[in-house]
Image (cartoon, one colour):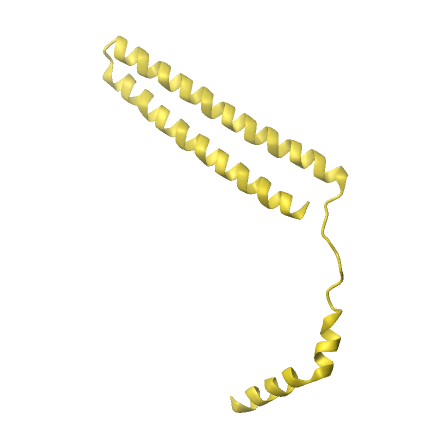
Length: 110
């Protein structure tokens, strides 16, 4: 193992190694072409918007089930409506977080 450390120390101390490694990475900024960038952003925005709209619609339907269940004294229907409200909130939160992360990582490359 000491031979490996001696070799690594010799290579690290070599002044020519640093000169050669200085220009390895070019001055390049990654950018997506506009033909790809605009439609992908539109698709991501529409997907997030439709997902959140579906979660809101699911929440409204669930609240309607709660109202109908309580007014007609059907406890099971009201309980299913309350579960629907909870799951629509969880779904909306998941869609919001996921779409924000996807757009944030996507915009890092743009």
